[in-house]
Image (cartoon, rainbow, N blue to C red; front, side, top):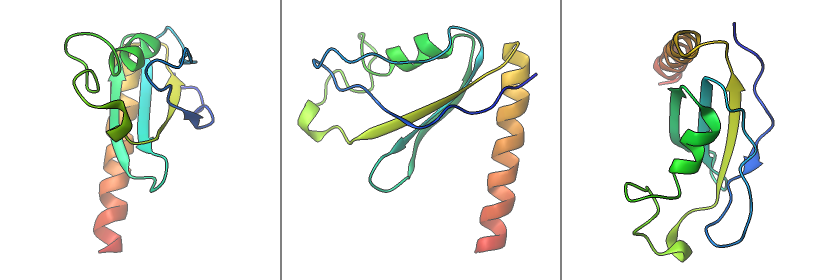
Length: 106
């Protein structure tokens, strides 16, 4: 079972003491560039809060080796599910819809 998407929230910047607000359950997250709305990353995971937190910290960080001034302003939203299988199924449906939309828009 899939719940609804959260509102878009600003992704915390490193060193500012801001927190990620996300479920600690399986689900989907989507991160986009705030200024353009361009998709930055999207994934179905076991723990949404942990996955979002790992984008900005740790040795395998997306942002760990980058100059924080060069990191784009990001926004994120989340959608909790009852299991990772449900999250993967919902993500596949969303990907299929996006591909259909993009092929019709071209």
